Length: 582
Image (cartoon, rainbow, N blue to C red; front, top):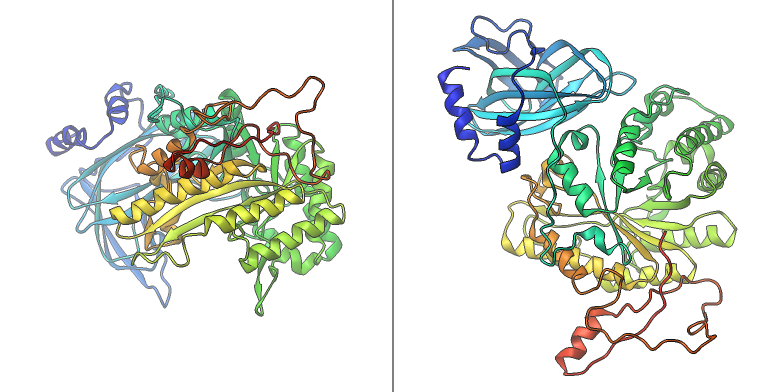
């Protein structure tokens, strides 16, 4: 390490979190680095560069070892970050091995780059590990990565394209290390109760991904400490699970499931049938209806059979309704076009056979508010399935919402009463409701007004779920802004989650915790008068639901109504019976 790098390492402690700083300096003495030339004192071999150039987005670059650094100068940056890359081939990565990865990086102007490793071939091994905000001052990047596969000729890549300019790297190290120690978790909740303590009311979950999630000890500690369940964000998508027809690869999901079991977390199967992130052999194939049905059944059997009895819920069909010619109807996907309108019926019926104990869910976005045309169409779909005896137990409302960059909330902030009314009509037909992918993205720039909108959204939606007797789960789609899906999908938006990029709790976390703080962990409202015991031999009030709606929760008071009555100097509470949660 040269003098500049030594000073850089010391200055880095100013921006590293205490846990990260501890890991950096407590890491074991350097093992044998897999990188044979990471200091670039003479040349840059065996490093290489590549530009993916098209007519509409021409890319051009030059590599040079300059002043002990590897610098890539982009004369034309292309359209996407991966249009210009700097790479290293021949990394012998071992399965279930942690690797310490470190390098310094700077650029002529502020820019965003990505670091990844893997082969990108079936079985799926192409992992984005780190999104890096690069400035003109050299920044030390230091993290640990858990490799899940045997990749004898893996690559490391820096994706740096998109715009013209210069990016320079130095002191690149990739070395095997022992697994990092998971730090103890202390909840930031004001009353000392993490979100998971309120599972008797609503089970809180988050989406996770491999290997980024499993590689980050601090992230793992927060998820295990705060949540009751996890959903795999990508590892169960069909292109990863079945990259070649008939060949199933459970590596990523098995690792997540093992971690969840070790930490006593519920696991959600997501998804079985979806038109996105499907393998090329399926999307480009010319299959008959009978062949497509057989493919769908084989995929359901492969996934549900592998995890039979381990998952209480499965998202069987995902996002199957869309607008076409002014009408809300079946989305024109390869599943629908090749099988027909009954593909959803067939999927749910077969899923019930594959794992009879699991509850089956239809999952979609923009279906939360009664009166919304798509929400009404999905309700009609599910009600019709119930009437015809198709096995369906729950609806997953994704709940992705937003405030626009200019502060407009007209289309991005929902009507909570309409959500409550929607949950109520599902209750009437005996369908559970889950909030499955909740986030609230903020149009840049971030400001206090937008932050308050985000806080209110999370708190209000959680309260609606608590007040609905059939709303049992509330999942946020990703823990933090550090590896958020939002900026890559909506370039003018970010900050969608309840922890920030430094894995610190945001006001949105405290908004959720504040809602739960009104309750005891058994589900009773703090300060509410307990209901009188039922007379001897009484069932406690009976059931007048006609055998259709789900029973309401016990002793749960409408907090908003109670607060309003309290302002008038009145004392009020209402009583309800509570159903047992799975």
